[in-house]
Amino acid sequence: MIHVQSLRKSFGRVLAVSDVSFSLPKGIVAGLLGPNGAGKTTTIRMITGFLTPDQGTVTIADQNMNADAINARKNIGYLPESAPIYPEMTPREYLAHRARLFGIPRNKRNSAIDHALERCWLNEMQSRPIGHLSKGYRQRVGLASAIVHNPPVIVLDEPTNGLDPSQILETRKLMHELGQTHTLLISSHILSEIQLTCQRIIIIARGKVRADAPTDELTQAQSASPSCTVEILPTSTTPDPAAILRAIPGVKKITRFSSTDASYTTDTWHKLKVDVDPDHSNTGDLRESIARAAFKSGLLIRELHAENVSLERMFLELIEAEDSPQEIQ
Amino acid sequence: MTAALAIATREYRSLFRSPAGWISIALFLLLTGTVFSLITFQPGSPASLQAFFALSGWLLLPVAPAISMKLMSDEYRVGTIEMLLTSPVSDVSVIAGKFAAALGFVITMLAPTLLYIIVLIVSADPAPDPGPIVAGYLCLILLSCLFLSVGTLASALTPSQTLAFLATLFFLLGLLVVSSTLASANLPPPLDSAIAWLSLTRRIRDFATGVIDLSHIVFFLSWSLWFLVLATAALTMRRWR
Figure (cartoon, each protein chain N blue to C red):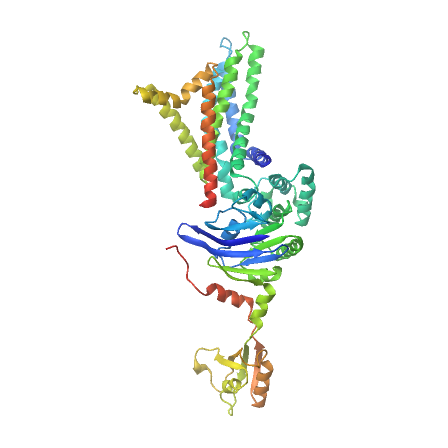
């Protein structure tokens, strides 16, 4: 449905998007994730045809954006980040205008507008000027205008930005519903948002795709080799608990949380991080072995948990790694 | 075509919801009405709308830029341009629709002045000569085309309405002043005919006497078209930046 091939765009000397390629099949909800300034909006603007890329091609429902922009744009419903709408119009007037622009025949316009208003919970607000509506309602009008012509592809740039928690829940529900019948591309800088709504995650940073995989796969890949955090009290017979832990099969490395060794005396709690050796046969959950080892040596434990290496961490690693900000030479 | 019409309709309605639109209409009708009742509609004065047309021509100078200034600038400022340029609409249709809305607005503004003609026909004993009246209205509409197309170009170049207004006004004033001062100066042969060709005032004077010359019509329309082509190019350039 959406096919993006080596997109590149620069503004003056700043390279906003250097190389973005991905391909989304029909009926998928995909998330475009990246920090602010990663090139998300620029990428989306090239996909929707607002900006012409310096290089690369965009194909929407088999229509090439460079060759036949008008037909390609017909297949997209787009909600830009700030949901810009003519403030003097009412939601109903605005949707009627959009329906005309997208060439919906006159006899089908009213039912299309009613349907969009209903799906976005706008029925009571349909005849108030948009300029008088709250940010949440304006966002909904933007959403309604993205679906009024029932396009196969829907692109939403930061759809929950600036909404209150209950509106975020409603929007999430709507995105889930739309995902059943449409191909959705949603951008966000909030990982949990994307993780909840999207089946696939494309991580973009500094103008490049850093990861592109199904959400489940990314989550699983991260939990394969978890580490443990343990807080343990030494005794006079065992002044160095780290040595006991190091002896457990499958342990790769023990790190102290405090940077100074001075704080680790025999009568204070030692907070240690236990890393798993991924090559050892005894990988996976080490908590039981740690508890048994401590019990055998008569050591007290007051905290023991498996570190949940979240997507968040990987996200941070991915976007912080590699090259510094780019400039065209 | 449907899309251009949709854009024109929306823009036309929004011009009526903007203060600049209403103020333009109100001041225009107030001033032309005053001139009509104080100068034209007097016992003994000839039954012609000369004074009205002369004033209207001058009034168009600030009024046309005031109408055209928001056409594209407002889309850039509010950000709605992103919705417009991602709709299945060609850039030509966008500019054509916007221009048509502005021209429609000016025509709406001129419509109530037809009342002056009715008043003249009813009250004046030698009925007014229809020639200069038809030519006068045609001239006003052609002038509006030219002024509004310059305004559309200015508006397509900047998100600031003020800048679009001033740029249009000064360009049009410059065009009028330069062409009329140069026309009165004695220039050598190839230059003087070029200036005479460019001169708006000469063509307006022809219309005022009731002469409808095809070359004048072509002159105004082709220049308007040219400015609209430039405005379309300015819009397309924004996609490249």
